[in-house]
Image (cartoon, rainbow, N blue to C red; front, side, top):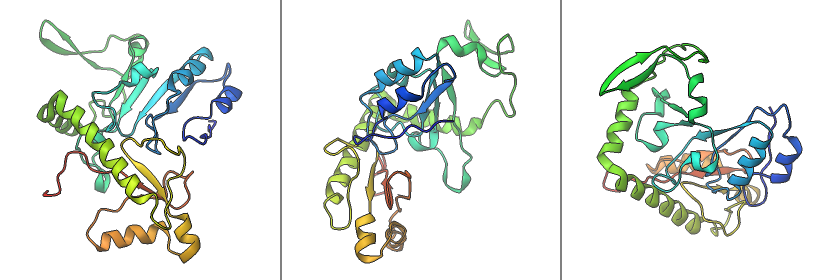
Length: 255
């Protein structure tokens, strides 16, 4: 495993990527928008570099809140995608879940999927084991079906336009928070200066820590004292004293 560093804009360091790809490259796992909440505008070039080396592009669908109805991972150049349903589609996560992360692939990889798969013919659904290149049956191959049903119900409730609006609200809320807090004494918004944030914004409380000894953890705990959901603390690791804020996109204040 090789870790690729980020550049000043918060995206993949293209030159670093070029320096490590080669005949042994199996693939690149990436999320876009990334964990900094920044959309990597070089994604097409990144995909081309990996594909030319014979590797695959794997999309970590950690959070799709910014792109529903806007763009598709496959169009960015990704070959495989998994979706964390809890981040985008209102399913459980706190307390350990149960979680659900369905995996999708482009057509040229479909023969390698685990069996059995659900197939449809003339309106009739059945299980198929006919995949000569399959990786085989895996434990609990149906996944957490009840969680996927919850996600499906959420999608049906909002509809296509509703999901698109949810993405727009997520981005609006994220940038509102980032702009309100980035100039507050003790905070900064590292990486991607002047760039819009997508579904989340990552602030650093390192200046506050240096001046007062107050850490990001103290900020999160105090927010809990006031009855507010605390941001993710100390992640991503490339941001010192990180506070990762993922604002809600469909839940109103009244809720």
